[in-house]
Image (cartoon, rainbow, N blue to C red; front, side, top):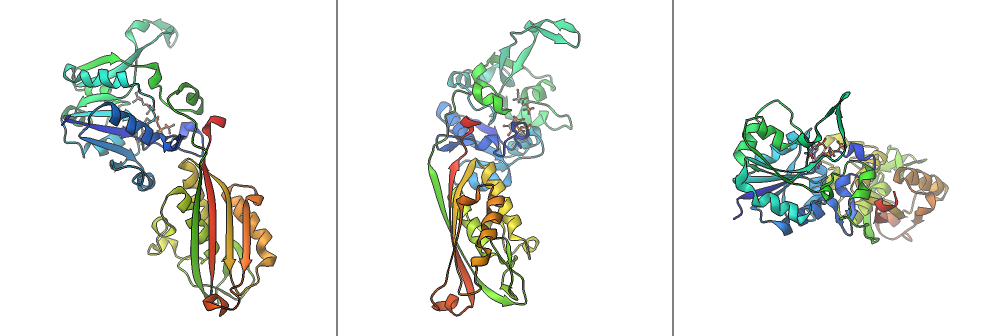
Length: 373
Ligand SMILES: Nc1ccn([C@@H]2O[C@H](COP(=O)(O)OP(=O)(O)OP(=O)(O)O)[C@@H](O)[C@H]2O)c(=O)n1
Ligand SMILES: C[C@](O)(CO)[C@H](O)COP(=O)(O)O
């Protein structure tokens, strides 16, 4: 028993990163950044428990990668930390930002070995440039740059955060109680990933794998009279549509499943349950937009998609070009990467009897190559 819990904070929105992808989900080789950080800490110290703090959507996906304890974050770093601390029963807690993704092994050792030296053990860097406060130079030897991870006595940190005051790190919270903060040497390598430019300073992360991930989706809907019909987001000029909880766009539903399949994100029913009244009559284009947003924020980029619509009726040839253009625009790819095929079932089965339609879809994803940004 190490009597230490590791909390990795990753519930931020990456707003300063200014990419469609969240920085936590940038891929290094075949693993996302958050997992790279967790595995690195796990290799370098013993923990009773490892807690990853993230958002609800991300936690769903994270659980497919590794069995850590996952906790939903809050509005601020401090709120996220407070949520995670509720699950901590060990004497010590090591808290780090996932954004600080290249913390050297010797820095982790230095912090862990200093456990007894204060209520909070903090890695620091000296300032090497001249410093001014407003229009006056100040003594730079009295100034420190504070990094993470920080090791705290759990009960002190919990107590320090029982306040409305917002602290930018754990050490400032503990210092506010008058408790001893002990400084150890940090490292320039433990630079925090905040903007795209920071990527150049982080040598521990490699280019993402060039692997292609393939997903397959299938959906079936029966016809229903006196409804509007939509396929691939295009209104089809017939006086019947599909029986469904949403607008019944069976093609978009199959495509969403193919995209989710390639990303390892489950299926359409998990993301947009048909028991949820907010999706009653939903425009499937909006669901596809949301799926694309999620896939992109999790570090993937869409390569191509291919759909086969099996329908005895209606005739779809006149709509194929508009279907291609509509899907390409939502997927954010050129229309030559969107293929639509239509086929009959040669009058066989429920499709042949004109009772409904089946759509098969395939999608390919790759990891977004952030090295080319
Ligand atoms: N509500 C929040 C906000 C931040 N963090 C985490 O705290 C760390 C430091 O935050 P920062 O680098 O500022 O990340 P973001 O908040 O994502 O970035 P930005 O401010 O640019 O949106 C990050 O690992 C971030 O994921 C968190 O867990 N919960
Ligand atoms: C905790 C921290 O990384 C210490 O340097 C820093 O304060 C986080 O600041 P942010 O504004 O939440 O990125």
